[in-house]
Image: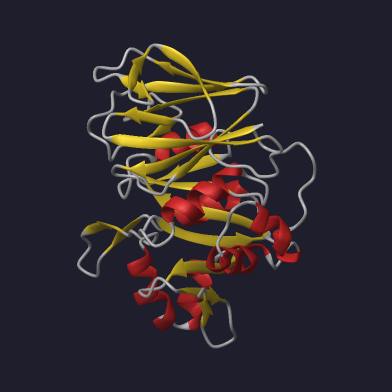
Length: 293
């Protein structure tokens, strides 16, 4: 059983939040919740929970200031069904119930069976609710069989630390606001980053044959640099705008130093229907355009 809360009005219109049977997902405005909706200033820090026991789904108000409403009535707790309306803060959600889940997402535990590689399973991707453009991006990320990671910047979206903590994937800090996170193909965090983060300047993706610790040690060494005059500066290389500007013009020696243990880097382009892939080449980095639409 999977219950999906689809935002039909409010600041996160169109977002789909999934909760699997046997789990509880707490929603609110801050990182105290399992799923933070920082855009909705009318939500309490910890506003309401969605509890699924596999047979039914229950909405429970968590002592919110403005209340939680199901089908127009303020509730303390109530069992909800397909098509019910849930209002919390400035957001309205429609309840959808899937009795035979085959996907993962925010609020779902990781699959326990070995996943089919995304690069050879377009059907698996489509079943997970990805658009054709998102499918192209995922296949580009996982096609080589190398380990995939993301570098994301919490200053771009206050929900990012909560997403990382809730997902449970291994992650390490880079500088004051950025995180390096491991992204195995079956990770539920992949769904969040692709659906919520792509096109919003959260960071970039990379692949490597090395482990997370080695990639982390490499990139940490680039955070604090000095200008030719000796002044200290923070190199925000995880900003897509910085990567797009600097990597293509790097001479081979600088590119080799910057890539380090990484094989490829994929970043959003200025146009939302495109991604840029940077990889090593004998005369400096090679740039390829990935058409997503």
